[in-house]
Image (tube, rainbow over all chains, first blue to last red; front, side, top):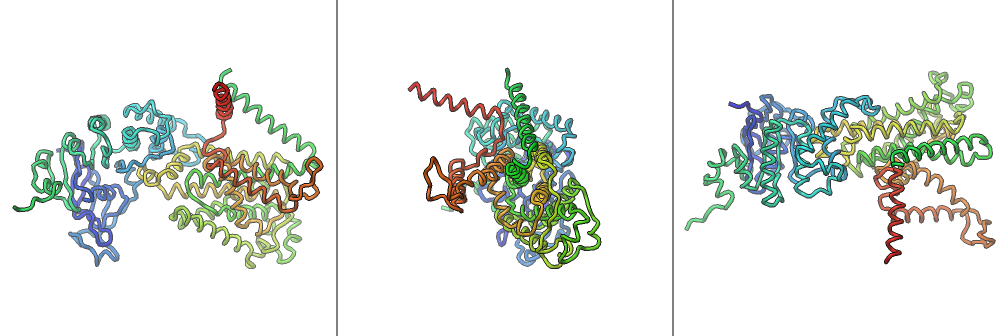
Length: 280
Length: 360
């Protein structure tokens, strides 16, 4: 049995009176590609934002590699207004900022590409290496960390070579074609040396050929970097071809989970995607 | 001759030219005092402009607190460098605090201490205000600068800052090389920082703070770092301004000073160090070159122009600024740095255009 990497337990996110994610529990084991799917507005990206520390969950617990990473329970006004489940099950508050979570080994990409647009491709990836550098501001300013800097530059170049962006390394990031920007964003995430990679709709806006290339690419980096991948995707072909297991969200609630075959034949999933058929 | 050797030779020539020019001015300070004063002022403003650019142009934090940090640096430097025997006459109205009376430091040490005080103030106020963004941060820092000014002029501080009487008898620079060398060192360190891995992290925050945070860059830590370092150099430049002006009071550090610096940064190009330096010389020099416009007896080829009168200079100056901003929307340098290749490239492109035009 592979080791558990990410363990999400009863995670709930409530914005005002809206429960965006309700009581979501999921597990991601080492070496797996797990997909999180669901119709628009189902709460997939909100779930990602909680795992990466952008939002603190209203209630629930998230562990990474067996250690509790985030935990929260309804507080303040939320105590009275809480609409989710499992109220009172958690009593600790552990909150981390996104940079701390990245340092633990979870990297992500964004649904609407967020590159450092006016910087070069090379700098985009090199910036992600800043996290791993041990130099403080004095040694970095006065170039006392030459060896480390050199190592970071070599590593960046190697990464760009692996994702096939070596030729474009001096181009401005925003001038790249769409598919390559996606690749660059993944390369940038890989530069933080993650164990778990979260991909938020990596195939959005891609044509069928680019999508095929992307699924090969995801499988390749998973092998090369010994990654565990959690992916949000609408593109069913991609999801079915690469994922080991699938979780399906609808209106913030988990409605199904299992292997691609199970999900494809699940009546709840089909009705969530196609709408419930009216009785004759 | 390849480009590298050409650029090295040009760099050496440029440095030699600058040093030669400075030596020339220094050789006869009395007849060149006007030029010397413009150069000294320009290099001091250049340091503040680059420091402001580090914050506004590279980290994307729109701060308008420069005058406040300059005031801190200026007062600390002034208090520490006024000769001990002069102090009783400087503080003739209120007297000087006993513990301060014999506290004296050489110029460079005083400047450093002034910078450290400014940095400490920045570190303190940075904790609450760096949570703000864009315009809100600008207003908060603007307010902070005014608070500093009010504090320095407060009657309770009379024995330290001499209140509204200001400080004078500050020993000036011994020669023109001192301010230029100090400015070169300050700007050099900031350039090294900008090109280091921390500088890249600052740029990442400017480009997209959410993505920067997802790349493991602690936003608060890096913003605070940029704010403190920028304020440190702003404080040093404030101290240099005190030494240059030889007498300061709180009116020197009004909001207008910040706006002048902002003008330099915008004109030179937000995100360009060389742009800030060029902008500083243009603004400080430009105000002086246009002085003939204020002279109502000035004649062009014997013709008396009725428009020339005191005050006309500022009209022309403002129009020129508008023209520059309209035609170079991103400042003179944009966010590029000056390079010889860029300069020669500019000529080549012009030539090509001319020759293409000739053929058609």
